[in-house]
Image (tube, rainbow, N blue to C red; front, side, top):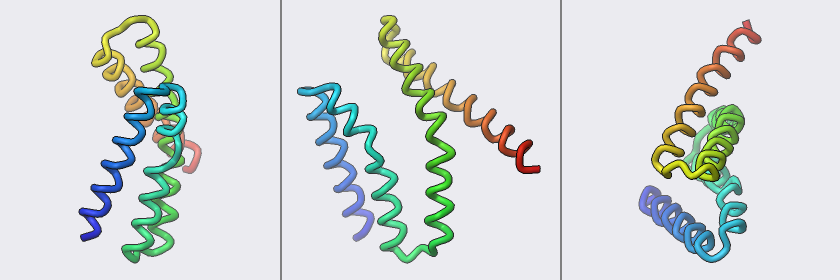
Length: 113
């Protein structure tokens, strides 16, 4: 039952943000940038009885992902602004995101050892 509720809530949020973005692109982007997915995930993990350590580790993972996500969005924005095709812009953004996360993992490992 939880899975159905989670899927429906997620679909409603995505549909709402998409409709807002059609009418008000900037505001749609701002709402899309809200940590809705992270907060809902934290709530669902807690409701499903996960230990605080698991929720805490999840939150740390979200923090680790933020810089790469910011880079991805910046790259996609720059590519689209320079008239690259959407698929190409997204592909370049995802590649930059992946490279950044790989480099970030290496740097964190070097710092912590």
